[in-house]
Image (cartoon, rainbow, N blue to C red):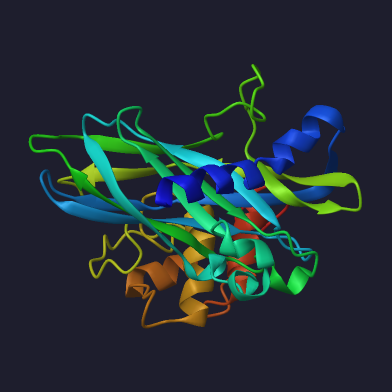
Length: 280
């Protein structure tokens, strides 16, 4: 039954790419969704969990989201995927099609090292779409015995044909919505994640501190990226669930006002998009 749901869900979410084949998509000018995979530390032979987050979600929200994560299946296997708080909208109760398919679904292929992630609703009411920033899903897996170094987790287009029976391979990360007969697609800026084996943790909530100041580096990963903006927003909403260390808070105070606010997250996003910001 689960396999059937995955197939049906994939067909539904693929509507975005299917429409692109017959109708030229309309790109939402200046609107870029950030997709990021977390960076964590772990040891060989252990279980791990890593978040996949969305940020800079436009005011219109997201009706369809279709992409995958790629990894070295000789080093890690994915055991399960859990939907995050961002994906848990009321669409699951209000969308009549949810009886036949999952609003959120995943397809794990550890032979290929590819896990597809899908979210879609047929509801036109934007209040049931994904809105705001947060965790889209949490990926749970196991690290192989003897694995060493840094294992990358990449964000890639879902591996499938653009529509059933097509010989054309999908090559886009689809995030957007339908408006009348138009397909509105957002640009996507992807930040890959990693599992650092035996290294210092850059996982949000790490209780340690490297005592090194790097402006914007809220998660103390050694660089400032979209994961820092996501962590700041998560911390503002749920400080206990997404703590930031003392050093991380010093780093996160981008505008230097003595606190960590949504303005700091905005400045990081502006910097990533190449816009003038306090990080310049």
